[in-house]
Image (cartoon, rainbow, N blue to C red; front, side, top):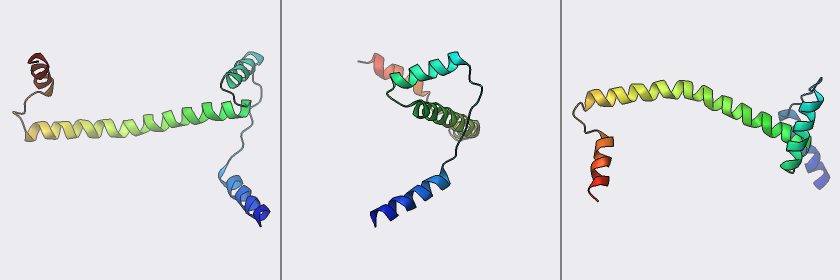
Length: 100
């Protein structure tokens, strides 16, 4: 039964994973990537997957910030309108620090 479970797991993983082939890589780039993989104790495939995953995650966060930052600015402006006489937090922190 264990073999059947592994076969099922392989089928599931194959359906959520993609394959990517890259051709025409300059020798210097290939060598740099190979050395980097060795430095990180990974296969070349593992290193490339890490690089691609890291880049995709950074891009996802960058896209998310395009949405979050304007929303935070609107929220800050809304709070400033609601509490126009609120003390400046920077000034409060300085006063607290200087009183020690």
